Length: 372
Image (cartoon, rainbow, N blue to C red; front, side):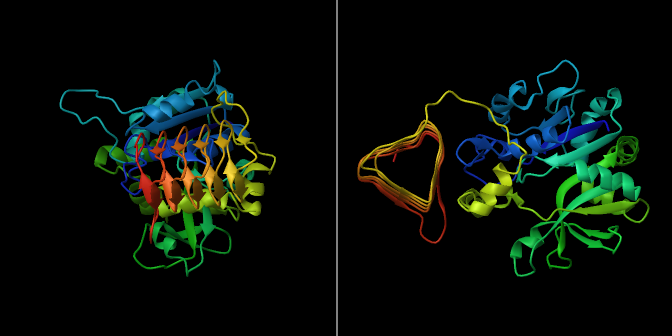
């Protein structure tokens, strides 16, 4: 089965600021050594997809530096490979940005038309999960579907359900109604924002929608055609998070890696998550250090106390320093006697001697290169 992968990374939401002030949400660091896009991209590669387009527009430098030529994902190849797709001006007076998810694909429609793929898998670069799409492909063919949407379940007690598109699914798995981000919790099945579609049909839908100001994949293409097309839901029962919803969601997702069952599903399922390699030495935890329930990445030197925290590559925690319930990103320094609690430090932050930083009531976020 020939499949083209498309990863949407063009969102300009403010929910993750200040972490997204200098980078797109797909490039936000995760779990000490990964970026958010690593998960969707690795899922595609592990499922046999060898041609992937990454559609991005806001603050793309960090993402482009991370992906480079796609070597770590075995996408540096003559046929197929990875394509970084930025919006561009085609005539004077035209705006240089994507107006929506459907418009982003439409502006790069030559990638679809020139390829020999039969199907297109559309995913998001800021979703954290590990799954093989092979069963999805088989399900799509078996049902004779035009579009298959990967769905998940969230308990009604969880307010996050109202942040997602909700699905009415019959006993055969067919979607009879798709409600995009309603104010009330109508259905328990939600869309994960992953769509598998026949390429010829996608081209037809894009040509009929986008020139008529229908720029959104869900609102302008899937929902208006829900009764005309065979749209099915493929249910995913494993771990899945959308980090761009809020700083709290990002923080909680990182902290989930400290749970044994989440680590096992994300990293010990037999499907490797690939990322850009860096030449760091193994972490060094000295004799006077105290580390409990924490993840310490390579290149770190720890002399202080670390509890319930994620410590990224190259971080230095000096003697007498205390870090608790926090996320520290690459190359930051916590100096002697400093105390850090309930906080996120972006890359290359220095917390000076005996300083105390604590998030009270909410997670405190410190911008990159700050000195406190």
